[in-house]
Length: 160
Image 1: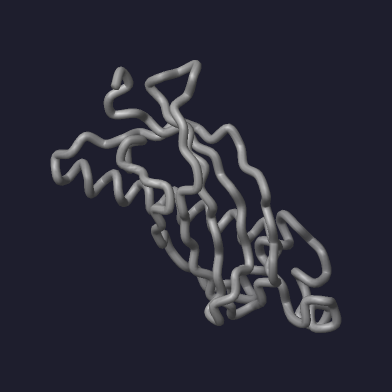
Image 2: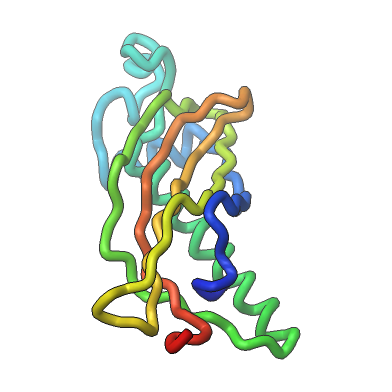
C-alpha cells in the first residue's frame, strides 16, 4: 500500500473484476436484500431493470472485497521485496454512493479507484486523509456504480 506522499491526485488503478451470476445474485439477495427483482428472473424481467438485477449492496460488497484483496496483495508484494509496508487506517466514511445502471445476471463489473483529494490531518500529523472515487464499469463500458471514499493514509515522514 502506498504512503500518503506517494499518492498523486489523479492516480488511478484497476483493482479487480467480478461476474455476477444469477446464483450469486439470488444467494446475496435471499440473505440481505430479498426484493423480488433480485430473487426471481421473471420478476426481474418485468421490473424497470429488465432482468434479474444484483442488489446495489451486493455490488458495493464485491467492490469492497476486491479493494481489500488488492491492498493485501500489494502489501504482500512490498513485504516480499523488503520494502516498508504502509498500513492504512480506518475509513471515516464515504459519500455520493450511486447505483447508476442495473447490474444484471451475466454482467462483469471492473472496478477502479482514482485519487481525487488529499490533505494532511490537522489533529494527527502522522496521517494524511485521502478521498478517492471507486467506480464499477460493465463489459459495455458503462459506469454502473460509484462512491467517494475517505481513508486515513500513513505519512512516511510526518515531520516534513
